[in-house]
Image (cartoon, rainbow, N blue to C red; front, side, top):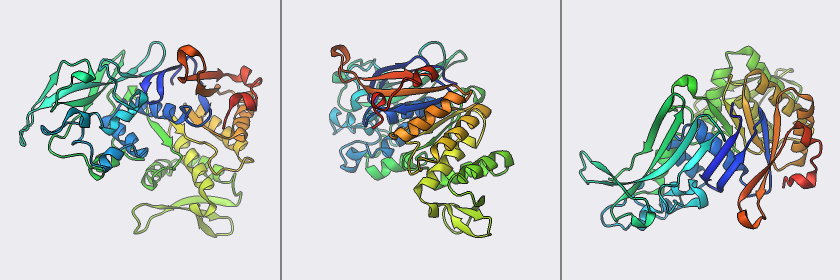
Length: 399
């Protein structure tokens, strides 16, 4: 479990430090204050900077627009007749601070604990390739400034994860034979998409890695829901947690099953006490969101769960009991949970649960600094169980 968090040069964050994290953590703040970016940083950290995930994050936000307009080269290397400006439009630039590649190539994205512990670093290297179709050869150039990149060269994105057990790295390998089109770019990242853990290759040994499961605002892909359900269906105790959560919406629900047919993925179907049945989506988006929250949380022991916009479609009266279930599962299954919200009802339910539950809980308000030395930068204010009692709706700025 992460005890603290430091993020540097990632998306909206120039430098952000959170000295103390809890087992269950809630992020609040106005729009564009960095809540979803913080969840992305945690996802990248948990996946050890997997290059395929970096591309998937770009696609999820439609930041591959340049590829749609056919302004970019093949993955990120300019053909000989292209100038270096096209290299700089590679969509992955959006992951760096300010949504552009740093002018100083020695600057890197850094994610990890504030003190000792495993840390992730993501940086750029300038490379040139010969144009041999059969056996392209790569050469790394000693270039420290973006202005010094020669035409015909490209940028490699390298992820490096270090811990007491050593250091391992992975790089995003350029494709020198094709131009970047949006369809090709998305195809390269789509196998990760909303189901990024199926083919995960952690850079450290398995016992040192941890799984990250996330429920985005757009909800999980159906195939990811099916994959998680297959892991939980053979474990009656965990399966009952999912059914109990659904009963928060309709107490007549007796069971949930996955109906497999000729469709690409299975359909979640609710079974009622009068032997009637109803597709889960028939109860609305809120029921589907609640199902996915509990499915991601209850599926296995250990790891990290990321829940974007916790309250999406869920009635305020259900939130206290849902938070209680999430707190219980986090403690029982040794999970660390991070969630975001724009709802004061959600915050209030979280605060009430935190005051009575033994699991350590923290609330963080993200916003922009008004100090002249850091004007406009993202800063964070932390609330533990004691200081939560003094928090007010106006002070937290959840909307």
